[in-house]
Image (cartoon, rainbow over all chains, first blue to last red; front, side):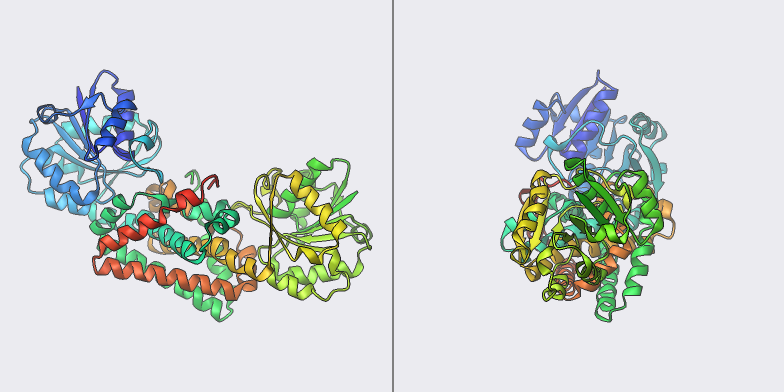
Length: 283
Length: 283
């Protein structure tokens, strides 16, 4: 068994480590655009060695975890050269473009489009850890376009990682995830910016910030490269989600201006439902 | 030694528990507008008993932790009747109105205006715990207006709780805290509302939400009563902070629209500075 990781950051690295635990006898090889990542990934035991072209082509599983605006192109090139029994899967945060760009590839049935709903604000192989995916949701798009035996190869592993598998249409996925994930990153990044711009003295932020602020801006520590690429790829849905968010903030501002405090109370009380909705999801 | 808590929720309850650990021989009495809170506070050992008027008047320390729009009035009434050696302190998230409303009280020197930068998204006495304030910042406003011996009584305790004490002008405090705390709550509540409004099926939120979303909306679980009261009291500063936040989100939206991805990258990269600024603050 040979498993190859293309992109050895937080997600790719963690997925390889999880597979490693399940299939310790397999060879794990890797590629990364950053030479330093390759070195770190090797020293941390994420991979045994750097992947060479010939070994990639005959791999059993290739995991592609790179910025989403490059994924379709990279996967097309991989599919062009892989053996008949190789499974290629991507883990990107958007599914619509990648699925539509690969729909006509003659080896489309060797590709599986996935999105594990897991991560931290850290990035790079040093942030990867085995167990990141335990009990997390794994979304798979267009599963019926993947050859049955290759579906099973991946899903068997996800099951053993105790992931909760959900199947979603790529367009639906991108729409929902724009709200539930991508928008949170914008709200965090811009909250962080607003506070940094205001507080010329960074000591004032450290001294006054409680765990509440830290939690709300945690995602503003995320990789700008990963997120620029996601916003680019999911532009239309993200714009809509952001427009709705701005509308709600403006309505809040207006109610504050008009001193409609009863109204503000009701909105907040209603939003408290998140307590029940998010029960069991650690922040 | 007799210590009385007026308002036995998360903050008041935790402060009493912390004092209890330091002065186990003191009597702890309490009042709360909610009869259920009183009962819970007693059963959890936050207080020994319900406070009676006469015992309140001769207390050594009275801790007032109630919604901020009622604090000044309540403290005025307390000061009117307390003995010459009683210290009254409040813990509210706004300091400007309370300080200006009490400035002329004949017993102003028996009042200390504080704001511990600590909390969780939970509320009520059941959410209180000893240790909430360890290593947190304690802001004190207009310290020089409090009688020296009474300053010492409070500060001695805060020191023993390992709090980092900072002195701030009340207006400055309200301005800074509008950015570093109050705005985070609005951004969370409105993010939660945006997602709830979009996702008619709450299962979709639970399934798709990762720890990132959960962290960003954690504060949207906070008490609507506490927060309506804070927004009311700090309206002017909160409006300004919110206006700046909306401006930044609109600029983000415009850059997305114009496909200025290099610009978005730079903004996010710059905001990554929060990693260093918030080092050591748990989210």
